[in-house]
Image (spheres, helix red, strand yellow):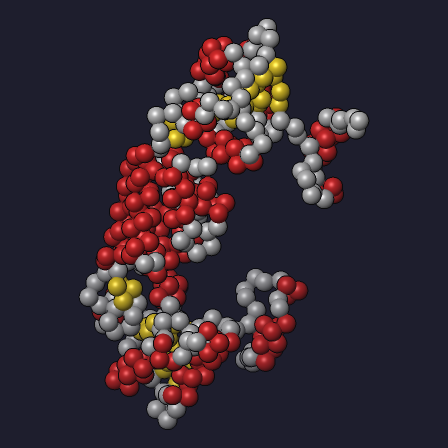
Length: 198
Length: 198
């Protein structure tokens, strides 16, 4: 029904996660209304990102340089390491501006059900780095899920006896949330992890 | 915070309607996980659509050929013309497979508040075509809105005395809808436009 070039672009938009038929159609048609200049800019950005971005050899964060900005920054606290599940998390945490330690990015989380084992997410590289760089604290910052818990427990076990503080970011009720809309598991965790007001 | 090439792609994704900061971020990161082959296909489709698609000189539908498929198809009913507000509507109606007449695409709808006047949406070309091609019925298929009503009334007035049947697609309660969720205006329209069961 659609001319071929529209049909092809609709199919191409569906490569992206979370974009279905209707959204792909809407986006494909909107391209026709975009200035040629913007289409060129978009196309160039798509090509550039694939050629210029690569993982930092030290921490696996995405970077355009030989090493990432965090690993190059000598003013940061070299004794604290925040371990995250993907590169995006690094940008999320760093945007806060309150954490000044180092990062290490895993390739996802351990998930035996999906066939993802410790060796698949780069645990070995993490452990080597921790042993070599003499960190004093490791902060595990995974999403609260079975996979996150499994990965945290696995790392904790592997680092046993190394005299390093291992902590995990807090789970609980998000700021500004309405108590009645919080699920039971979160509520239970918030209760268990309660802290003294001094 | 983000490397430049990621930042640029996020900005570029925001050119598309309905894509905000968060979605643009998600899409930009997902490009990094796409195969090079898919990125190339996507980029090629973007470029091709801009160079190969143009409005049909007769009806303004988008086409890759000299004239669109509908205008070239001599087996269609040349006496009925369905007037729509954009090219996408042509594909929506034609997908139904139940309408076999011709189409004419306006460049939007008359909207005095937004400074869109009859001459801006190509009414003159429509009227010229109607007079030249001797249509017997004109079906106005605009979205139910003040702009749609204004445009329909304007066209009706301009074609007065030409001995052409002018009709408008039905408004009412959509099939399968729950009556309680239908707005008052639609309900009222459905009541006014009631039809006899013979």
